[in-house]
Structure formats: structure tokens, C-alpha cells
Image (cartoon, rainbow over all chains, first blue to last red):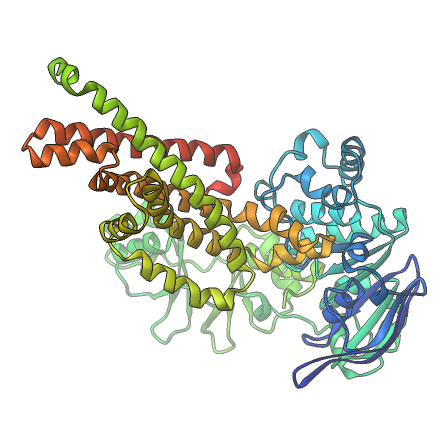
Length: 373
Length: 212
């Protein structure tokens, strides 16, 4: 158990931790969350004495940690750093065995630990043990970062925004892996993040901080049900129950950086435009800026050689949608039709943009993984 | 050529050997001193920012002046040459050691502290290994310079390849000048290659990319 009693920390004028009192139970996954500068990272770093509080005491299993030698204390607490703190001059194996070596474990024992840990995250020893961090992806590096923290089997592991630099997919996978590891190894984990998704996904208990104080301590479900104040509610964002998803329209997904030309333009000019912009069709406007249709490179090639202007080649076969049309209907047009995009029109008949399959995929990704604000 | 070797061969080979030892001994001393000083300075970067420019001013005193002064004080003994060369060789290594250590990212140092390394362990296991590319670059600069500075030893009658050069200049003997200059150039090149080899042996190739 970790216990804070009246812990305060001040940097110059600003109070970072304001009389903090809290308890973290053994074997629990606790997430510290809050806006930047709320003191969550400072709280974390006081636990392994990377930061010393000005006032108050911290106990681990009823022992005052200010009485324990710093270096010894840190060797008994796992620490996963923000970004990637792997030592670039050491191989995976050397990185993982840093703490065991500091504790003077024998070579064979270190090697055994490395093999066991790598097996835990499905990274074969033969393939990865002798790689250097720069030879691996960010996700793999941070996995090793987590393993390094676990190497000397510390009962407590501190994690300071460990997945902040990873892409959403890898992040999700690593969250699940760490959750699994925690349950399996029964560690007490204190985890700092500013991402509520991450907190809800991993925590047994969430501690919400603001301005050096604790605003609310609750299990994820409870925090979702009864957020203590508006700040927490805004952090919950789309998870919160009282926020209905707005129906989305074609305009939400279209790209407006499109190219169009007037109907009285020459064929050569149209070809040049297509070549320059690397597209195979052009949107064509009437002289009053309303949508006239499209011209494709295919029709120009088949018939257009002798023509002066593109006018005779304009077709209106491409699927069309309006800005306030339901996005779902717009996507259906795209998926069921032959066209590579849907033209979105304003109500006055002018062109607003197009919806492509790429823009559709993006919106689906957002729906699955949340907005990448 | 054979005529030349018959005439000067012995002198040439002894000059090469003397020159070589001047360089090796001076650079080794310089390295030990500069490495330790560099580490000490990196523990107090504020003071280092005052001390380093002062040392670099000393560096601008011409070698001839310095070696001459030292000769007056210390006499015509090899140690005069070695002391002078050592002092000149210190600065590049010192500066690169200091800069290399100072530039180790705070991230790695914090990770090391968090793992429970003592300050000395952080230095030896993290800071020095990460600064090594820079340190070795400094070593190379010092060594190559020392090869050319060692020519000055002859000025106070203490041998080395400079002796052939000075003799050649004063007797208008071009062959003799070249006989001194070319081995010196080759020696600089060979030292440089040896240090390159050292660099490859000491630094994993994944860390080598950013240093020359």
C-alpha cells in the first residue's frame, strides 16, 4: 500500500501539490489523470523520490520512504518513463537487465529473466534480445521499456505517460498487454495519463487531479456515472452519458480542397489540369458557378481529340449528394456506385466538396478509436 | 632513392620512432587528463562555461612560443616536448568530452535515476557511453594535430621528423624536407585509421550514424 500524508510541493511561487492525502491499495491499477500542470507527474515522481516533497510524508507498506536510501528505493520500484527511455547504447537484453545487474544478480539469472519477460509479450528472444532500440518500432521499444520496469519483479511499478508518443492502434494494444500483465503478475501500478480513454480502459481506480489537489477518486464506471464537476465531465467527453452523438452529414466528411473548371474551357487545358493535379476526372462548373457535371480522361481520350472545348464531354452520371444529407446515405452512394467519389453540392447548386473513400475511412477510424484531438 | 636511404635511412627510421613515441605518450597523457577534467566540468556546467573559453584562449598561443618558453624553464629533455604536446592535445578531447556528456538527453538520465543507478553508475553506464562518439572525435583531432605539432621538437634539438625538415630547409636539400614531411603525413593518416578502428570496436553501429 502506498499512502500520502499531507504532501505538498512548491516550485517558486506555484503550488504543485497542495496537501495531498491518498491511499493506493496493493495490487490495484491506479490512474492519475488531469489537465497539464495538475501535479499528476509530480505525484508519481515523489513515490520513487525523483522529486522530494517540501512537506508531508509518503509511506510504502507503512515505511516512511524518506528514511529509505533513494537508490535502493528506486531499485525496488519499476519505472516506465514518458517517451522512450531505453538506453540507446544497450541491446534489448542489456536494457531489460539493467536493474537485475544493479542488484548483482548472476548472469544466468539475468538471462533467464530476459527470456521469460520477452516470452510474456511474444517477442522471441532469438530475434529481439540483441537488437538495439533504434532498430525497433516505437511500440516494440515501449514494450521493452515496460519489461525493464518489471525485470527485478518490483511489487510497485510507476508509469509516466508511457504510451503518449504511440499511434492509437499500438497504444490500444499496449494498454491491453499491460492490463493483462498487471492482472497476471499482480502488481501495484500507478499510471499517469492525460487521456481519459486510456484511464477508463486500464484503471481499477481513477484519481482525478487539478491544481495540485484531488478532485475525485472513483472506479471508472462510477466516474462515468457521477463525474464530480464540469472539468471531469469535459475530460470524459464522448464517454459521458449526457452527451448525445450529433447526426453527421455529408459536409462533415467531405474534402473541400477540390479542383474544378468552367465548361467552356479547352480540351488541352483540361488535360493539363488533370496531369498537374494527378487526377483522372475534373469537376465542371457552369458559368454561374453551379455544378455542371464531370469530365473524365477516358472520354477525352476516346472522343476529345478534335473538340475545341470540353463541353460535349460533360456527363452528369457521377453520384451527387447535398451538404446536409445524412452521412450514412452519402456513404451508401459511394459504396454501391461505380464512382470513386460523391460530389457534394450546396443548396444553391454550387460545389461544396467531394466525399472519397479515404475520407470515409477516416471517419470510421474516428468512430472506432475516438477523435485524435 | 637507394642512395638516399643509404645516406639517411638510419636517421629517418630513428626520427620516425621518436616522433611516434612523442605522439603516443602525449596523447595518452592528454586523454587521461582531458577525460577526467571533462567529466568534472560536466558536473558543473555553469562554471564550465567560464573555464572552457579561458582554456581555449591558451590554445591560441603559438606552439613555437610555448615550447620555447618551456625549454627555458625545463631544459633540453624529452619531457619538455611531451609536456608541451600534452597541453596542446588536452583541449580538443576536453571540449568534446564535456560537450558529449552535457548533450546526453535528460530522458536517459532520468530513466537511469529511476532504475536506481547511483550518480557514478549513471556516468559510467549511460553518460560516458552515449558521449563516446564525441569523445573519440576529440581524440582524433588531438592526435592528428599532435603529429604535426611534434615537428616542433626538432626546434629545440630533440629529434623527431622535424629534424629532417629543419635540416633540409637549412641546407637547401629538398629530398630531406620530403623525407620528413611524407612520413609525418602518413603517420597522421595511420593514427586516424587506428582511431577509426577503435571507434568501430567501441561503439555499436546503431549509435555511430550521427558521428564522424
